[in-house]
Length: 300
Image (cartoon, rainbow, N blue to C red; front, side):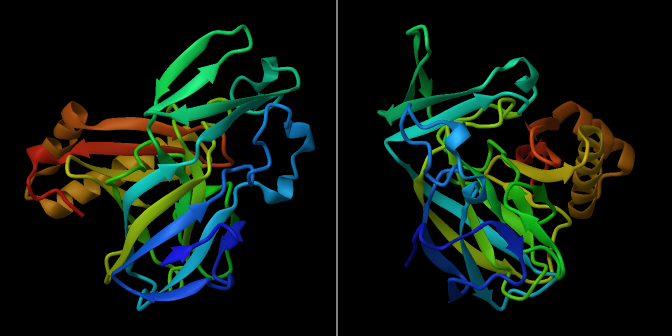
């Protein structure tokens, strides 16, 4: 079953009309556009010509029968197949270094054989190992909220977390009937922070498995692999996001073990990693990542 790139939305909202209704668990294929709506695909395409109303399209949404407020929507990313080329940009007044950039600049970068083949203006060529990831992914927020796909939050959204790739399972808090799940904004590779506003933006085909975990909604999205458990938090400032991510990881460990608080704090300090996802969106996103092998009971 495939959801094509003709089925897109630009804000996470409970009023969105679903593309399809499915019973969980279900395996689905998604076709996505890049964050520019596939508008910048040649070196001659510039951001000055960009239709900003077509930015950050997400494919979907999908209505999951039986998903109710208070549940967790479980999404496993099985595979990501990238297009043959991606686009990276920078422009004035955007990103952490935008104040020193004049105009806008585009590099269309071929992708093949496990690498992005980047070529700088001076002719320098760098083969960058691919690390496919999903930038925008989530569910509808609570009734009455309408959050554009460029903004992250408790529902997920534009988290730009480099860990969200193949083999990862995510848990989202269901806030409306059916969850209304969707995603887009694929990157062939991106550094933590996304300091220049874009990664290597690229269309892709993605296969996911969707399921529902009853009455287990997390406050913020949770990411799990065989090795790690992580909580992903977006707040108006990095400081606020770091504090809440740390608090939530402490709570998750406390709920799943009989460790006392001092031991949890010390183990988090010794083994945990507080990492930046992105600092260029309306809300800033961080993740707290803890290795599961030291605490066997530590899983979602």
